[in-house]
Image (cartoon, rainbow over all chains, first blue to last red; front, side, top):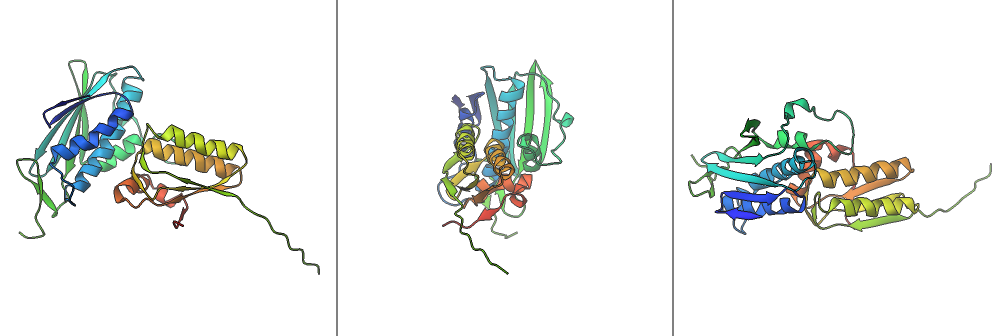
Length: 155
Length: 105
C-alpha cells in the first residue's frame, strides 16, 4: 500500500487492504477527532469505495494479485474519487439490482445509492471509475484545503 | 377437558461482534453461525452494538445465517449497531425490514 500525498492511495486488490480507505478519506477531508459535518460524507464514500474495490478484486481481477489506485479531488460541493484498475472491462449497467432476497449481489446497488454520479471509462487498457459524492445540502461546503466547513444553516 | 402443561427450553446463542464486519472478517462470522446451526442451535442473536462498519460481505454472512436458521426452524436476530454509518447497509438494501431486531441485554 502506498500513500502518494494525501490525494492518492494505491492498495493491493485484497479485502484487508480496503481498511486503508477510511483513514485515507479522513486525511483527504481533513477530518479530526471531533464530530465533523464531513464525517457522513466520509462514511458514504468509504462504504461505496470498499464495495467498489471488492468488486474490482473479485470480478475485475478474479482474485489475481494486483493493485487499485484511488485519486481524490475535493471541491466546493463535495468529493470525487477516481478508481483505476487494470482488470477486465465491465459495464455496471449490465447488472440489475436484486429484486428478491439473496445472500450476495448487493455491491453495485449500494454504490449506486451512495453516489451522486457513478460512471466508467476505458483508457489505456485500464478501467477508470468515477464516484461522485455531493456534500449534504445545507450542511457543508468544502474549503479549498479539503476541510468541509459547517455553514450552520446561515446564508 | 384435559390440560397438559409442558415446559421447553429454547437455547439461544448470542454472538457479540465488534470492530469491522467486512469482507475480511465476514467468513469467520459466517463459519461461527454455521457451526452453531450444525450443532442444532438454530436460534441466534448477533449483537452488532459495537460494530463500526458493515459492508455487503458482512451483510451476506448475516443473511446466510438468517436463511439457514429459518430453514432449520429457528431465527437469527440482530441487535442494531449504535453507529448510524454501520446500520446504513441494512437501510440501503432494505434488510432493516427483513431482519428481526432485538434490544440489547
